[in-house]
Image (cartoon, rainbow, N blue to C red; front, side, top):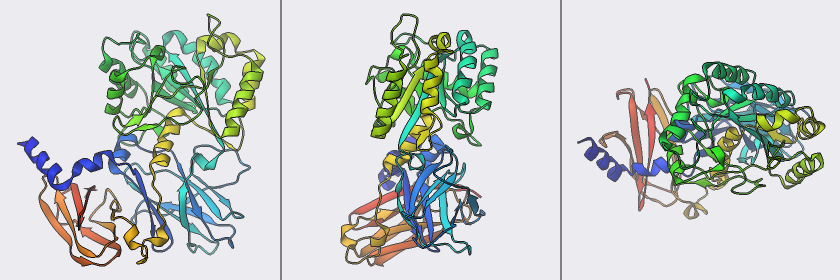
Length: 491
């Protein structure tokens, strides 16, 4: 019976369309010079999105000493976003950088745990909101020129000491490391988990899964290696701030043991919050670009590393030539790419006091124009940056251009909401328009619009005070257009 009811919902509302949304965020210009940024609810729940995203806003050229503020809903207070300059060294924090000469504000802000909406405004010295125009999501955090990300493999009992020796080298230089853990109890004991937690609490660390048993491919139990390792990490550790919220923890990176990979892993990664699988050398030894998003599997295609620093026991694989290391970094920086360094503690510790290690780390660190970031947060950011489809807000109400713009149904604001919520939509062709609300069983609960509308931008509110807490769907229909979105009502 339940299956029949859900089939009815799918056919009536087209709910399947929202499960694989291509536009994870939408951006709208609101009255009072506010910018509204909304994130798809299902993606928000699945991935958290605590890492700050940088939005480029056009600002008036005749202003100085501006202040940026954020708000999550009309019922919350506006919060000041700290102002930074291009000469300061900062990474992965909420901040705003004003370029008054170019008339651009680079606003880096996070989403809240519980709300899919983010409001931004820019105030002048008299606390008046100035006119702003949304330009784009920056390719990199704070619109930096290039990226440095670092991964390290094989954290387990036998190599815990090596991690404790190596990680301070990177942390002292402000370099972020994503560490892959082998999670089975025969590999990682209680003492090792405690040691890992201590390193997490010391900052600059992201945790990745490196399987449960570091087996050769194909695994005896794919579910245990991929899902079981995720569960082990979630059970034993309190993850860093950007990898958790009030209700969930997120592990974004799967590091393939022994650089082997297959479709069996591909199909399991979406069952958790994995975003990016990482290999070594089998895709492209020098891969300095983003991997592509797989809309069917709902994670990024496997990425590889730029190089490995150090020298393994067989004398192959790692690089210890300082001239080559620095030149490779310079080349990637020049191209605006991603410098992805790998290390294994067993291969780095024997050379930890060699000059090429400290000299290269000093060479790539502490640069104001480089984004230093963990691998998972890099791809979390890219998921939003690459999915956003921009539009010119100035044309939305233009009758001249109206027929060139498609129908658009926006995510309600706020979402989740308490008592009432706002729904915005665009009508590009005059005609009969209906906007209706349904419950999870596909039953019609409210008719917000049922009339002839001219071309334009419209806003309607749904008052849900008399309804029960839960999930609802709203459907816009006109001519041959029909679209459905989900909203969450919480009393």
